[in-house]
Length: 131
Image 1: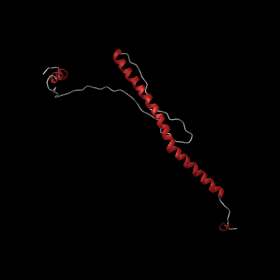
Image 2: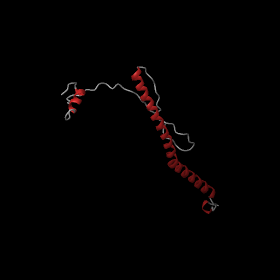
Image 3: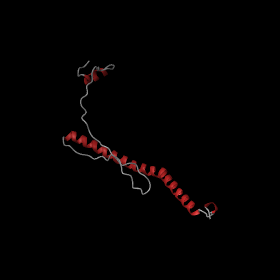
Image 4: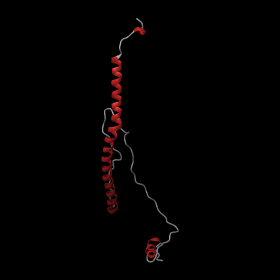
């Protein structure tokens, strides 16, 4: 019996290939449609938390200015996505939040402008002289 005369069916192998192809397509559709929506929910929740935490930072800065006592505040800069067995998540977040010395600001060649009393009012803040 030669290979050319062999007439056995290959239904098991074809069925397995079709089943595997269907599984891959199903997982791809899940990754493209469901995962971004779930991640958007997670990111929205994190955005709300970050806004609250940044308000705490603002309050800590204001309190430090008023009292002279330093206070710390925590801000989560990234979110953790839910664990998935099959689908792929974005890379883990990373980042830093820091303050820097602002330095000094010089305004040169500025003159108060305006009509009527406005120039007098801005002159109080410009160089201290009333024009």
